[in-house]
Image (cartoon, rainbow, N blue to C red; front, side, top):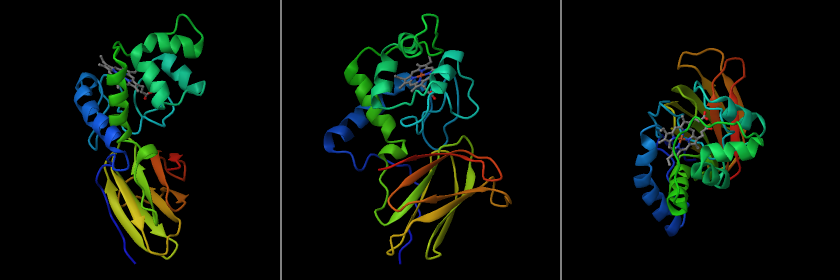
Length: 226
Ligand code: HEC
C-alpha cells in the first residue's frame, strides 16, 4: 500500500513535447498578463482575477473578484473558459463579450488584446498547467486541488481507510494513491481545527477542484474527467 502526498503544482507532465514547449514559451509571454493576473500557489486577485484553474472555469466566477457586469452575464449565460473560448477572448475581450452576449453595449473590464495567435496558444498551454483539466492524476488514486482563494485543511481517504492530510494553499493539490485503486472521499475544513466542513466522493483516476469553501457541505466543486 503506498500513499503519495503531493503539494507540488500540477505541471504539464502529460503534455507532449510540442505542448510542453509552447507552455514554456507561454510562461515568457505570460509576463504581459502578469501586470494584472497572478498564477501559482500564492496567487491573489489584483487588477484581474487569479488565473489558476481558469481553463474549465465558468466565466466571471473566481471568488472575491469584482467582475464587470458583462463578464458576470456571460458566465450566467453559460460561458465556460476552454482553450477555444480563451483563444477568442484574448484577441479582443470587448468584441468577444459583445458576440457572446449578442449585446453591442457589452464592455470588458480587461483593456488588453493579444493579436498573435501563436502567442495566445502558447499562453493557453501555460495556463493549462494550472488546471485539473490537464493535470496528471495517479491511475490508482485521486486528487483534489484547492482552486479557492484561501488556504484550507484537506483530508483524502480511500475506501481502505488510508488517509492523507495537508494544509493546501491556493493552487496546491493533494493526491491519494493505493494499490487497491479505489475511489475515496475528500473533506475540507476552514482550518485544521475546523468543525463543519464539506466532503466529496472522488472516483479513482479523477481530480476535483474545491473552488470555494463553505461550511455545512456547501463548498463549490468543479470536476474534470482526465
Ligand atoms: C491591464 C490589465 C490586464 C491585462 C494585461 C490582462 N488582463 Fe485578463 N483580465 C483583466 C481584467 C480587469 C479582467 C476582468 C474582466 C471583466 O470582469 O470583464 C480580466 C479577465 C480575464 C479572464 C477571464 C477570467 C475569469 O475568471 O472569468 C481571462 C481568461 C484573462 N483575463 C486572461 C488574460 C491573459 C491570458 C492575459 C495576457 C495575455 C491577460 N488576461 C492580460 C485585466 C487584464
